[in-house]
Length: 339
Image (cartoon, rainbow, N blue to C red):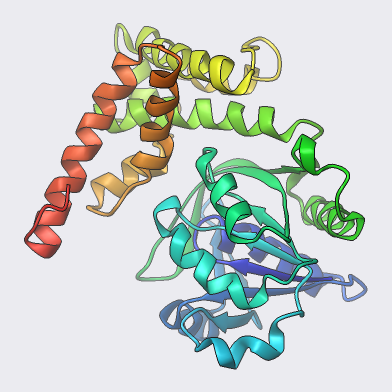
């Protein structure tokens, strides 16, 4: 089985790297992994390998990693068009348009597309762009960041999971594409990742989105980790109020009932852990002066809430801060404000 992973950052680089590490340790594994990356990242990987830093500080270096360049001319990629069975999209939402352009030469009609993005809006975009492909729902969990200077992917907490599944109206389609993603999840599991095929992937994606939107809104608004927020007098009350707003949208728009003592228990536990060092990646992106996924994670949540008449004052407050950040970033980088 041949897998193309778009992106070798914190998500693609980590989960793809664990697959490469596993197959290099087990030569009998019928698996090939290739990363579709920009030339700078490809050169970094060729020189230094994929470097994964564990929460204890130890670093795993993975050498002999296959890459193809996203900035190659399409004609140079045509011979690879039917080479891959699965394409994993591991990009930020603000880079999705470019990512879809980059995978177009490889997205033949029998390919399985597995996006590991947060939120929901990307699903329709991908299916519209590649109507003959089998688009899986997917989500993942990892607290990690890529040090662009060193190329090291720094994983900060032990949690690492991937979930994938077909949405209901796709379950009868393309048995071959379904089989390869099931096999991919098994390979991830063999590589030490908590990986499962979900029978209700939309519920799983909504659960992750409500958690992430809460974490992102809170840590961005407060410029603090979840643990720091929870250590204040009213931090937990605030976090749970944001979470309640998000879950109300999930119920109204996705038909997803909250289950804080059941399937969402691990997320709710995080919102009570005063020792948590977690900052949403959106917060880290904001602090570093970079673009954020605010529109995709918070803006889309607000739009869905508005459609159903659900008030979201806390999410909106955080979104205001992130829009100000983006406006300031635009002025700093281009001298103009496009908003």
